[in-house]
Length: 193
Image 1 (cartoon, rainbow, N blue to C red):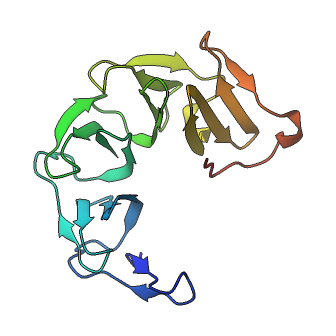
Image 2: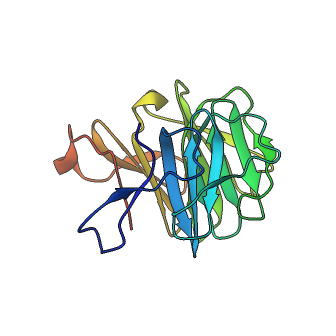
């Protein structure tokens, strides 16, 4: 609960960079070009246009300010909250409610080839998918409770999820396929491309 830290020397040293932050518990962060965004579980979304030196709240239209995760798909920015998904088409300046009211969103990712957006939620037996920029959503059943989804990553047109038992991917017929038996009983918390 110490806010944002930044390094100006390729990670050799780090210093707190919390100017403008009201809430120091940062739940997620991402960069879009020269802009940085950070989310807070109690204060919504913050933006920085000066490499993370100063931060400004950016919650216009964001009714639920308990933001757990952020995702940028190259066109739209998504905020996962304790009450559903919000969407911004202007890099976080303005927000509108997208979908999944009452759902506590845990992770959001997208598959770049087909543009689908995926949401994992706490205590839900499904992954939710939108193929039209968050306008409509469909539930895809998980082979186990959703609270065990620890990581999600979209690669080309395939969704990968990591949990306490390894990695699965979503096949084109919407069934789950175990990626590698050698990762069984491995706790997968992060994936990247």
